[in-house]
Amino acid sequence: MLSLEHIRQLCSGGIHISEPLAPMTSFRIGGPVDIYVEPATTDELAQLVRYFRSVDVAYVVLGNGSNILISDEGLRGVAINIEKHFSDVALEEGVVNAGAGVRLSKFVDFCVRHHLAGSEMLAGIPGTLGGAVIMNAGAYGGEISDHMLDVTVLRDGDVKTLTNEQAGFRYRGSDLRGDIVLSARFRFPEGDEEQLKARRKELLLKRNAAQPVNWPNAGSIFKNPEGTHAARLIEECGLKGYRSGGAQVSDLHANFIINTGSATAADVLAVIAHVRRAVLEQTGIALELEILLLGFSDEVLALFMN
Image (cartoon, rainbow, N blue to C red):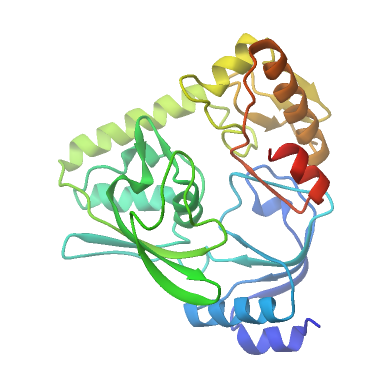
C-alpha cells in the first residue's frame, strides 16, 4: 500500500496531493493526479521509482507537459516532474551534457551561444529534452538524435547509459519507451554564432507563421505517413476548422488541434476520431497518433493507439 510518509522520506523536493495537471500541460487540459512529486536528485528519483514499482503504483514522468493529452478524470497514481531539478546543461571538451528537464529553447540557446551547429531546428518546439529524446523530436529535416553520442536513462530502477545505436532511434520514436531519460550527451560541429542566430530566427518565424502558437495545443497530433504529410491529408479532406466542443482542427495548420478555451479531453478525442475516420475513408491512409494519451481506459487506448 502506498505510504505518503514513505514518499516524504525518499523525496526532498515538492510533494503535492490531488494536483491539477491542466495548467502543467501545453494543451491546458486534464484532471488532477493523485500525487505529484519533484525529486531533487537521480538517487531520489531511482528510489521513488523502485518504491512505486514495489507497491504496484502507476507513475508517469512529466517535463513541461507538451505532446500529451491527459484524461478529464486525471491520473491515478503518481506524476513525477523532472523539469525543476534536472535542467542543467554544460559544455566540456566539446561535448554538451544536458539534463532531461532542460527546455529545448534553452538547449538551443546554449548551443548557439557556444558556436555549435545542428540544434537550430529544435527552436520553437515546446517541451523538455527528455521527452524530445524519447520521441526523437525534429523538424525541417533534422532530428534530436542526429548529433547525440549517448543517453543516460533509468531503466527498471537502475541507471544505464546507452549509445545512440542502442537507443534505437527512428522517425518520431525510439526504444526508450518505458525508460526515464536522465540526460544526454551531444557533439555538434562548430558554426558561426551570427549565422546560427539568423538560422534560429528564420526557423522560429517560419514555425510561428505556420503553426497556431497563440492557442493551447499539444503540437503535431499525428505522425506523417511515409511519403506524405498528415496536415496535407487532413486539409485535402476538408477538415480544417472541424470542431467538437472546445477542440478544433486549426485553420492555420491542419495537424494541430487547438483548445479554443473550454476544450475537454473528450472533445479532443472526438476530433481525433472524426479526422482519422474521414482521412481513412477518403484516402485509405490510417493516421497514427504522435501525442501520448495518459489516464485513459484500456479500451480508449486500444481504439486510439492502433
